[in-house]
Length: 219
Image (cartoon, rainbow, N blue to C red; front, side):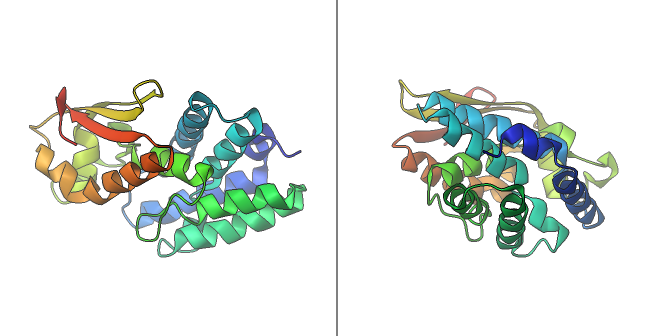
């Protein structure tokens, strides 16, 4: 049984994560390196655990989330599909069972908003974990704030927290935003599609997805 710890410690996988982020750095994208994928793995694991999935499903969700962006080393375009193929090869070489690989590559191949769909519980958890990761520390260079809306919106987010409430049947993404840096309208200009995708992923779990900004419910 291939564990999440083994995947995290695999030097080949680390290299692809690192080089994928270097590719995105050259394209002026926000941080997609270990801070992002480790956070996604943690949140995806929390989602599945809180919703009562078994320990192995939780671990598979963590693995999918940790590896979800390796396809960026090939190209940003279709990186979800590229990453799924790469994950298949890497996990197969590590000796993971085919039925487990299938669920992971399915989740990775369905996480990008241009083609994403919560086709299984791993994909649904990954979508919510990935799309809710908005934070100031993802901005690489403050000099780009005036010209890049993605950097400006991320930098404006002072605090970000995803709450999982099975009893109330909802996920809540709570953001504290400095509106002197970026108005709330800019957040939805670039993130509305992602938030609607999170709502669809929440639907998979028969739950709701809500967003509050500066303590006001906006979605």
